[in-house]
Picture 1: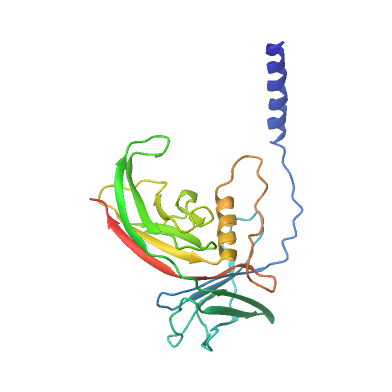
Picture 2 (picture 1 turned 90 degrees about the horizontal axis):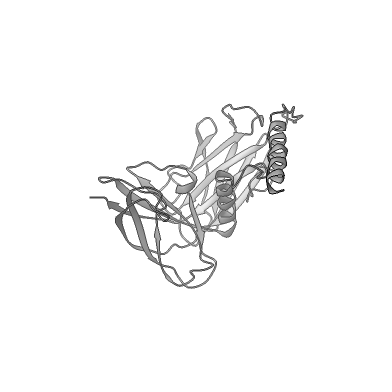
Length: 269
């Protein structure tokens, strides 16, 4: 009886997967293009960049069109205002007169593109110090996907829930946007504790590793977490990608981010 049940199951699954080969025609409205805004202000020296582009056809693998000729303004809550210059098509940068971003200040973005206005704002939040970095060689195992040196950071997480972070491990001056390099966390379970974190990927002898720590607002955390889920789907039957959450008002996609950044480095030797 079990043998017959298994046989029937295999026939059904074969039929299901063979039906997946059917060609499906999508009736998609590709005439409407949306503005995509990618901007950031940090507590590091500028200039700060805002990139504007337009969405393309869903099933077409082609470079996106740049949104040129826009008016782009950034201002802070102390009265500093700057009209960004379009230095490359769709790429707008602050001028030398705009002061370096500061922790505790709120920054507002204003974009006027083809007589339509888009706005966003965010505060630069403080980030705690990373005490140190260390490394250790590990053989491949359940905890370590490959042989190699794994870098661990040590830091005191400040008391008070609501802190959100992104960690970027830059190896030999290069940062990979692979899902296992894309580390976004909050302090829900580690609030006020002394924490350690080990990279989920190995580096090699002789590599230089720089940890870039970023503080996030809660909406920015939600945005990057959703992006991470789209970069790392769980299975064949996952829902198709959807538009990411955005802090931009007016109907544009993308995100205007405000972050504090700190750097720590180590040489594997």
